[in-house]
Image (cartoon, rainbow, N blue to C red; front, side, top):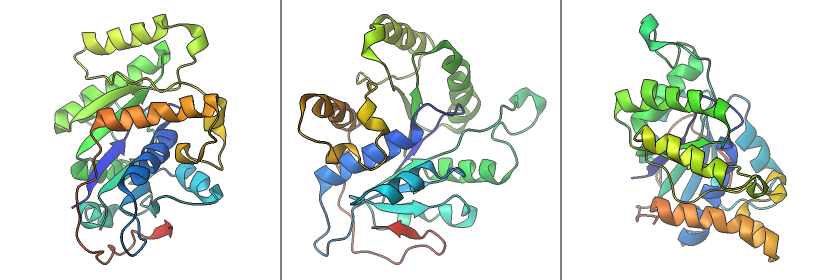
Amino acid sequence: MAKVHVVMNRKGGVGKSLISLNMGAVCADVRGSRPDGGAFVAVASADPQGTALWRAARLAELPFDILDVSDDVENIGHLKALPYAHIFVDTPGWAEIDPESGKDPLGSDRYGRILRALLEQADDVIVPMLTEPDCYEPTWQTIEWVLKPLGVPFQVVINNWPPAEGVAYVDGTRGWCERHGYPVAQTVIRRYRVHTNATKVVTQYNANRVELQAREDFYRYALEHGLRGAEVGLPAQAAPGAGVVGA
């Protein structure tokens, strides 16, 4: 049975696609391939903008399978039955809806339904946030309006931190999380120009000092997150509609 890791924050631009792809790459690198050459890890895209799909299409070599679930509400319920050890899911942001209005905070459109279906499958949620004050409110809304009411385990990870700005911003963001009682990763994912290279994931970076440092953050976070890759059975038939885009 696959473990499903949903990468989610209401705010766009916090690096959900970057984290989904690179955590998938690290996990696939550590886990290796099946005896038949198939992948033990998949990255699924539920984002209508298709950022993860676009980046994956530009990779010279895919270390994982890519699934497109952006128009697949019915079959998301079969994700855990797919023949993978881990599935990382890139999700879209969504418009703010106050739950006190009586409406579902995820909204009633197709992507709200997709997000609800994904959270029903999720073993855990990774909540990326930036060291910027305008990220605090949407992160709070994601956790308080959606994740806590559903009882889904989650962890905040500070992402895209430029070390040149100093650790005070990290300390302030971590302190904000701790004051709210939110579990926050010790690993901080630093901002590196190489991460914007759409033709590589971190396991394909060059062996120079800067790129090794950039890669290290994702290996450290995968280790901290406890990604070990449980054994799974022989490949089963994929759920209808949950198509493998690349392998």
